[in-house]
Image (cartoon, rainbow, N blue to C red; front, top):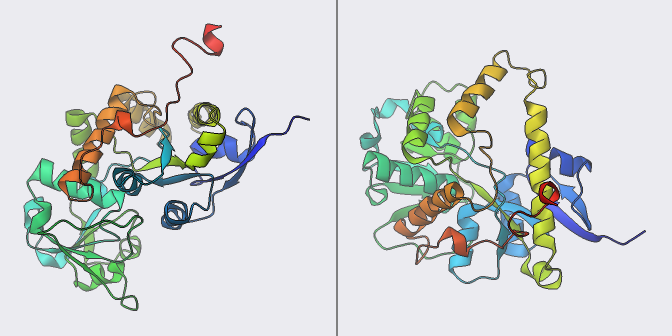
Amino acid sequence: MAKKLELTLACGDYEIVRALKEGAIEPDGIELTVLTRMDSTTRHWRFLRNGDFDVAECSASAFLTGHAQGRPLAALPVFLHRRFRHGFIFINTRKGITKPADLIGRRIGVKSFQITAGVWCRGLLEHEYGVPHTAVEWVTERDEDVDFNLASGLKVSKIPDQYKSLDDMLADGEIDAMFAGAFPRCFLAGHPDVGRLFPDFEAEEESYYRKTGVFPIMHVLGIRPEIVQKHPWVPINLFRAFEDAKTAAMKRMENPRIVPLAWYRGAWERQRALLGPDPWEYGLSEANQRNLNVLTGYLHDQGVTPTQLQAKDIFLPVSQGRRRGEDNI
């Protein structure tokens, strides 16, 4: 039997990677050990700081920060996690916050300043609702995935290690709002003083998409550059496998019996009507470049990167040539 290249892949346990995890789809010439049990922040840290995995889903903003600093990082244009962010801006409802402008001058918690969810939220509020990121006091909880120098004029403080979490601070009113990557525990528990800035967040997100065409990219797929140097055929083969796994997932998820939701098929059809047949599109299409350039613009505006990167200059090439492939033999 021909020997395959053994690689470790760390990523989220998503439907769109199920076929890779279960071995139904295998990258040509590659044997993957797939790790899916880590939380995302641990995975990002271990890959970006330590290089613990050969290939890893990682924070887009942290990767771009390191790339802008000239660190030896490489990535494929595979975007396993996207999320609209209007619905993840939470407020303490006792603070008199009823509209975005009410956040000016407030204390807002974010797990780290660099976290991609926070970058998108700050950018949305500044460019769509007129809330300058410099007009807020930021309260953080974690170290940054990739170190960088804060821009002058920013008000950022970090809570002590033994202090309560940002989730608890939001519920207790010690911070006025929170930009969350996931749902705060206090919100999931139904705390009476915690709610969303945008109660009808889906309408805001749909409006944003109709205006911009952007379904925000959260994560990219990093790969250790020495693997690419030694095995230059790997990026394309991995990319094709991720594409095939996503195609298999989308076909499977068309079946309304798969998900225990009464109106799932209706949600599927509404998504398709608004976002098109492949909302999780990989590669550097015009839409994906526009999406990424919005993010790199926000990173530069917020002082995280010294320059604005361009999407076309960030990722490894994954083209196998125009009009080539199984359908064009």
